[in-house]
Amino acid sequence: MSLTRKLAIITHEYHPVLSGGTIFTEKLAGELSKIGWEVDILTARVGDGHPALEEGAGFRVRRFRTARSSTADSSLREHLSYFLLGLPQMTAFARSRGYDLLFPVFAIPSGLMALGMARVLQVPTVVFVDAADTPGVESAMRSYVRHMTRLFRFITRRSDGVVICEGLEDLALPHIRNPRVTAIPNGTVIPETVARPGQNGPRLEMLSIGRLVLRKGFDEIIRALSLVKKRRSDFHLRIVGYGKKEDEIRRVLEEHGIHDNVSMLGRVEYEELAAYYLSSDCYLFYGDREGSSLAMIEAVSYGLPLIASDHPGNRAYIKHGESGLLVEHRNPEKLSRAVLDLLEHRDRLPAMGRASRAIAESYSWSNVARRYDEFFRSVLDRA
Image (cartoon, rainbow, N blue to C red):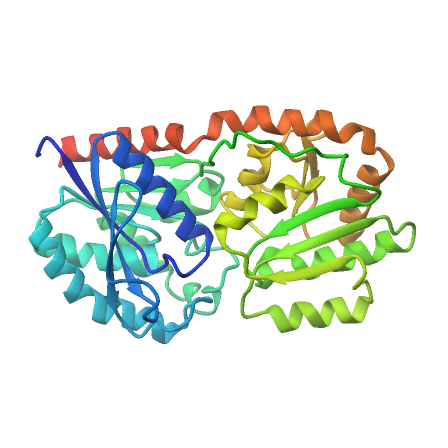
């Protein structure tokens, strides 16, 4: 292995696509570059607004032309084109770069692509497994991932190592037959400025960020808030995000008639999100199973109390009753009671925010990157 270790992060989602996968890739690449890795991000090119080759914060991004044309969720056709057109282009580029390790983000489709590249290039590959492709998780790919469990098992078995997003072990491990597996949490940037929960005016200002897809639970949030509205109206929710279910979610909002209390803001660039965190009193995540929502972890880092669905991936970032409230999933009635609890005890918000901030310190991207570095080293040593 060379003194400077070369890593290729292979992903079907990167800027201008705004998603958890994009932010995960960008932040991890930046931190790994600080501790001795020479990092390239190999991804699909979407439109002509972003260059084929650009320099990031300590890493390089190389975009390849495929049929990807949308910044929303990829269609099956776009996934197939990413694999069929991207594989020969990325393999040729990787051959010229001489990587020590390939790191695909998600088993499907990038993990399969990395296996093909690894076979040609004779380099090891470590695959990252998240909610997007873990069997048993509701996702944008659910219509065909449920039929691809065998492919998931094949990819994770043939890879030289597997990283599971912490919180998904119970779903992922039964399908993985690989002796080199680890679970690592998502990370966050620890901002210098913190929010001031409970000090943003007469209304409880809530925030929720994510793709507008049903597994994020926005429809159930709206139903819960309609129940809250029957008792009091001094609350407001801002929903930041875009996605293919936007019209459906807007219809739910229309049906429940709480437009004065819920604002759908659409796409907001990542650099602009800080202002939304800082002007909120609490963060609301009521999605289905994920390892951990990156936006939720960022809300913790800004010192916001959280109301979140009671799933394993969320429990690491929330101390129930101290930094936030964990609520049974798919139960709008219980979610409405949690919101009412914060409304009726707003004096607790500052202390809950401080407890959130203390939890975030353990999940900085620098700490998370060191765990990846350690695992990558162990795989390279064995390879």
